[in-house]
Image 1 (cartoon, rainbow, N blue to C red):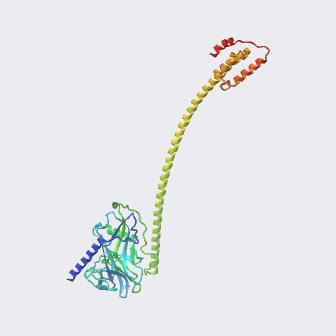
Image 2: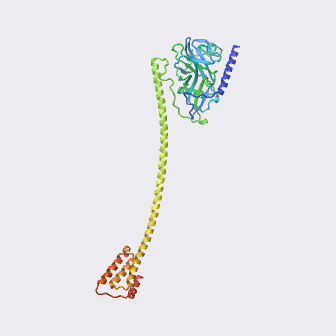
Image 3: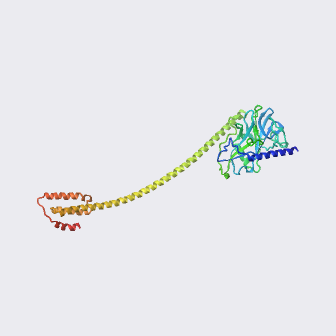
Length: 430
């Protein structure tokens, strides 16, 4: 009858968790950037939790609250696991960041808390609550310091089976404790998502500073609490099938901060600090490499644009040069044509001037010498033949004037009739 009742209570608790999970609103991450537009976000709220009490297999707790730390009755360790559904993540999901968000209910004294991966499956009936720093009487199907499933299955090591490697260290923000954004946690969650058929997901164990004095512990709200208080596994991921392309994410925190006091020996503490420093250095280097890669891509893009601009300008300059050369050829042709027209006009003007001079002398009955007359006629023929075109209009006129003045000064003159001159000059003019 007790087993049957426990099963009913456990089933009811699971049903309540499922109903709450379906209606919950996202609260956002503290360590993971859930506001990044290049990622998808899923807040898994379907969880189970329990507390195991050092050296005590007759008590257990798996409802309302769970705790970790030290008390006057010994060490307490908290167990927490999240159950995934097939539809929680697409097949091509690539996890970038994962964090666990817990709401504290009691913390007399703060201290360092670490998260480790559990390596053996465990169960809880979800029926007993914590009273002070102790649980209630163990029920069938509970987990205890010795049992993973009371009273049939045992831990390989009392106190729980877990990996020694720290998955994440507590980061406080008021009454919210966050664990995550580490590379190790990301890989664990990715493994759980990839193996959907029957994933081995035993969750995590929370451990405090177990060598500290009694009274250094913390209690957290369990899965049965109000939606804003329950544990959450917040996951950011990319998925090409959902429109978010994969990328390299390197902004991880070290699993163990440099200033974390884990009560290790001096050698272990020094080694841990060095490892943490190296991880921080790696994160910084990865970030710088990412920035350099982005700057290189930007510079390459600018060079391509610059080369395209130069090529375009070169093409424009070549086109302008060709157009200018064509215009020069056209202008030269026009100039040659104008020069030809001007030469013809000059020749015509010079001939007209000489004919006018000859007409003036002949029609006026001027007394000129025979030699001067024939000289003037020959000058006229020379102009028509194209000789001394520029001077026909000036030098020949001056020559005729000079010869006429010379003839006036001569004592003997020859009186030539106009009719004789016209008869003598007509054939030559024609």
